[in-house]
Image (cartoon, rainbow, N blue to C red; front, side, top):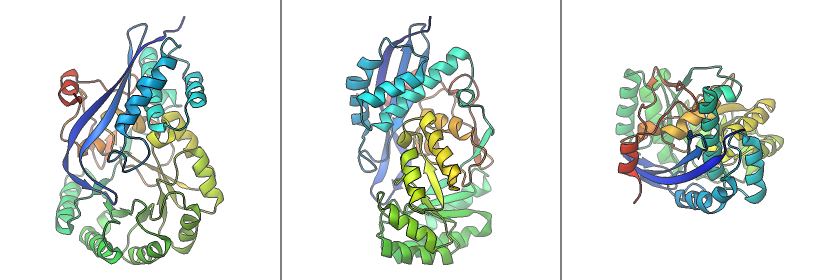
Length: 372
């Protein structure tokens, strides 16, 4: 007889960032994570995480709403159910609850972690097996200060911690942003890839001007220049320039990916387990993108170690991550709530070893940062 779900706990955790993290829609000084703990009738525990960017600044789910959704809606349905029948539980939650993909991702991750621990296999094995044990990771330069960003990039390149950089732009006039980005690209030269993330801040005309200037400056990729639901603008811009566009907020799941590709978009997609609804769902999106000839990129919601590890297990099963990943969330936080942090080196991060996610909660740290 299979073990059943005995308890589900959703905990809000607030950890300060190492520096203010400036985006077009907000500036973050603290990251809030929802840590999910699911225990089964045999005493095993699975861990999951739901994290968003800047409370409600990024999307319709906040950490507080995720916790409420899990406590009030998901928990009563899941208690007493067989813990290992993940597909059945996913279908049940989808039928009873529209959307809420961040909350569903945390639950799916915790159930996969629990199953991995039961089978004594890493989570990647449950997804078909890892092709890669080391995932490339870029770093986001988001201080907004050109000289400071250049110093930060050069320091990280010298330490071999990162050789690809993303710049958050869109909150200033377009030519101010272009000058800032061009100066950084000139400073790091051909030794580093420089990309930009506009976080939907431009209209199509501004994007056309900005992308022409960025293309001339040698920038490699432009992430989500226009509003999320304007698929036609993304398709037109992707046809107009040879600098690729990375679709992020426009694409939550496999259906969005299909619709954007059908609209004529070419370029790349930032996959995020939180947007898609979990590691299993994000790989469905990857399959659609691959079929459409769209490049893959492992995106982050600036998760801590638990959510980052879940993403890494998913990315490890993909043959090609054309644009690498941005799984640097734990490095942006001043502290961690796990016993053994992830191993970042050689411009990337190692896939955690051990059953399930391969990470373990540090109970003292969790108690320290848990929201009272």
